[in-house]
Amino acid sequence: MVMDSDMRVLGSSASELRLSCPEPGWVEQDPEEIWQAQRAVMQGALQAARRSAADLACIGIANQRETTVLWERRTGVPMGPAIVWQDRRTAGRCDELRAMGCLVDVVERTGLTLDPYFSATKLAWMLDRSADIRQAAERGDLAFGTIDSWLIWKLTNGGCHVTDTSNASRTLLFNIRTLSWDPRLLALFGIPPALLPKVVASSGHAAETSAEHLGRRIPITGVAGDQQAAAFGQACIRPGTAKNTYGTGAFLLMNTGAAPAESKHGLLSTVGWTIGRDTTMALEGSVFTAGAAVQWLRDGLGIIGAASDVEALAASAPNSGGVTFVPAFTGLGAPYWDPYARGAITGITRATTAAHLAFAALEAVCVQTCEVVEAAQKDTGLKLPELRADGGMARNNLLMQMQADLLGVPVTCPENCETTAAGAAGLAGIAAGVWPDIDAFARGRRHQRRFEPVKPDRWREDVMSRWRESVARCRHHPSKPEG
Image (cartoon, rainbow, N blue to C red; front, side):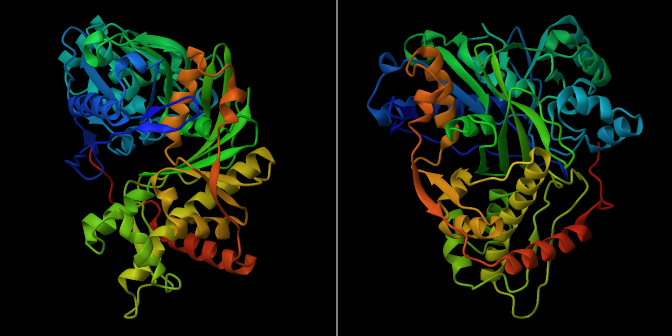
């Protein structure tokens, strides 16, 4: 996206990326395809905006976070597919570390939990495929990065190997109290320090692109994980403000101020962003499957032709008809953290229709969000005055009304639902002087739609009770992924 200082989108371009699932629980992508797609859509966005590189003040990057790439420094060639954040292949290794009594120390240092979601066990799996790979890593011949690091490496033709604090905090290798790579964690996971990128601020001069990519060198002054960028784009700049991004998964972030917040209810404590020397922390609830459930209705069952068709189909039914859909395709995230959970659809009768399934899929997104909001409120003692919603699914008015009804608080949606891009632009623009400070950027946020709750508390309680009964049937599934 190309944005101006009023946060208007002047032009955009998009490209869908392929996922590969070669084994049950495995999810991979081609790093080179990601790079080529990004290069193409940068050019496409500039063309759509009728602008050139000469018009750009800066570049901001927001990225899928825990996805892990390993490449050769000399050639820039990936050492294999990227292991995507959804991948579950290292669940067994996480179990072993828990059995060793490592969980408490890991949580204290990282704010995260031992789960295959995060980068460390993915990276260790890559290194352990052969002695040659591990030896090359020990020599410093290889580089590790999440997608931000990979794109910056490619944009600078291998001249810059960096990540920001928000992405580093999602690796299980970064100490959120010292804001640095943790030697004890590196030893625990068997990660050579030579692999790691330099950690920089989310808003600051991270790198400059090579001129060949856009026609001139452009400063990269904003870098953040997608969910942190979305929270910033939603102007969640005060403690207690929160957003939920409805994409492939659904991710709640609540600003908790300068200090890490301890969660006793299954949430993660993570870096929100760093601007200059000031770091903002957040609590996060990670729901692994949201839009992916709708994609499954489209691709797996064929009951809709396009993802956008789900709203009309679901709206043709008054409710789910007693059907509950637990879309635990890749396990359950917060607050359960059960990588072995498997999906289920319960309550089916001869009267069940495709419309009921579509309604239940949307309801599943909302009830999972309710669980993480409830956990955040318990951890912080704060009551949400509203939930700020964004992401592609936030365009679905039925979903947003359902969310307000189940939460019992208003849900607001901004004019531009792509707040991940807006947050990346904001972080970059503040560092480049487009906005003088955070408040000046935040004043540009404008919500377009507001959904007020209308359902009674008893209805809400019945839906949540039915959901929890169904989740209990899906937990600790005996079928475990290989690896």
